[in-house]
Length: 273
Length: 313
Image (cartoon, rainbow over all chains, first blue to last red; front, side):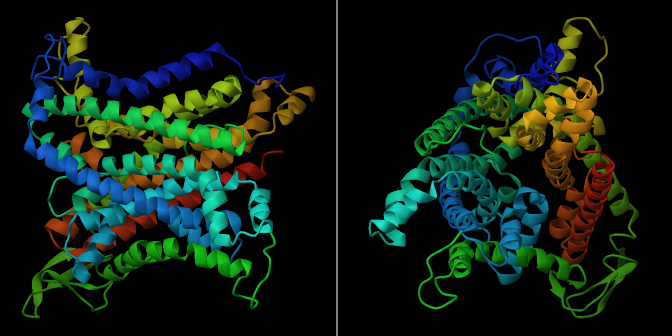
């Protein structure tokens, strides 16, 4: 890279300004989570941990958290299993109908959640499936699978075919080869896909709102609380905690992804998607 | 890609292995995604009954006036307008399309320089760090993220109270409950979806092409216009579609930022599907929204193809 078309300081300044815009809502969360005032406005009124105590003793929040965890764990496990099948099939084999099938599996990435949730809701109601955590998981898996696919496709793509052939030559069957050779190599990708799906599921509002039975999940609980101005500081505190947890999870996911790349000897080419 | 052939020609062949392997995922997507979407399409041409849908074909959910059927099987004398005839549905769909278009334009135009910066100006060892920094804010609660814009923009919110505290303004600015506020919020929500595809496309550009352009006497700017930009259009197209299509169905932003005062098409779909319990009309509105998005996207793809054809490679 001898000649760089534009290497303007302005570009760097712009990017930093853009990052400030991106971080704006996140940065003011902790600012008001510790602010001793029910109104979320300047000037700051002094330090308090009142709002954190409020959410800590809110039994509804704990129920919502428990529901969300159950849904997110099931969703991430199921999505990643589905994504392993599809990603392995699409990177290892060429078969008829590949493009339309993959297109359908990846469709939720661009389809509005609202349209998808409503279509699924109408069918579930027509068949007579009662709405529950189970139906939320059904919808969340649809949304998460494409993201898991994106990660796992690149994990499977960076596999060296000769390793697999070596296993065959040494007398392993297809299944034992998968367990002994392929799975360990893509494991970091699997873990990072699990974490991403978990985060998306915890975050997902539309599916939880429309495919649920009215039992709160974390996202619907937050949405419900936001209607009452007096609960807003509590949500600031909760948001601060959630930001901390997601950043920790993301750092973990990134760690596993890099380790995976190092293990397969690939060059690091960037982010999750 | 040659797979050792065993047993018969199909079983154990590449095609059957691939199909067998993808079948669980594909079946799930067919049953829970393709089938419900097909059902929505079918519902949209059926008759609304009392708490049910009657399999009687009609097009009035789209055009003209429609009657629901009452529980006793007779026609409800009251009528409702189809999705394309109802001025409210028209207004909401048009508003949603305009908001989505503006959000897409703002998001993609603002994102391009960022993707360009990370791809061309950042040392390759630090690229993933920058991408990580860009994506971090988006893995935190979506609902809270949207609501934070309400906190910032509202009459008594962060920006107004800060500006008043600094004596820059005396009366609070009216920023919340406006379309502009919704556009800012949505442009924020979809930022990473715009940056990442453009970044990936820029990364794929062979850097020697840029040198060649400059060796042949192009300036930096014309090299950008005639080499970099056309070669990165695949990423731009991807980000346009990935922002434009989901934005049309956004439900949280009109509720939290528009305060319910500026409903969008998703709110109307919800209203018809659930509160009014008119699933055929709700389905027809959903189908119309997707149709509108599809047409705009196709038009965009077509114009883009013309642009690329007219550009010397």
